[in-house]
Length: 112
Image (cartoon, rainbow, N blue to C red; front, side, top):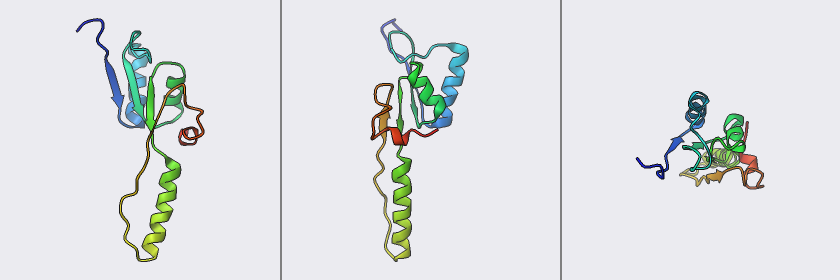
């Protein structure tokens, strides 16, 4: 592998993303800048992941929308109570990194 190759790792949920960060405490290989280290990307939010994104250890993550999940859960319960058929609901995910964590569309989805 040449020095110009970019390596990355993906944590597919909060536990996996935090596990990558825990391993990095010993290895010290992650960096949001691919020229400086291995890129780490996660899925979910939480204070550990958000902190790693803020300090440049992790490049970013995708978060789900707990607000929409709650809304559609109540909506589906109402539909079932009214005898209606319930099918899948669209659930948006949002990419966030240190540049957009305060965005009004993203910030409410970044829970601790």
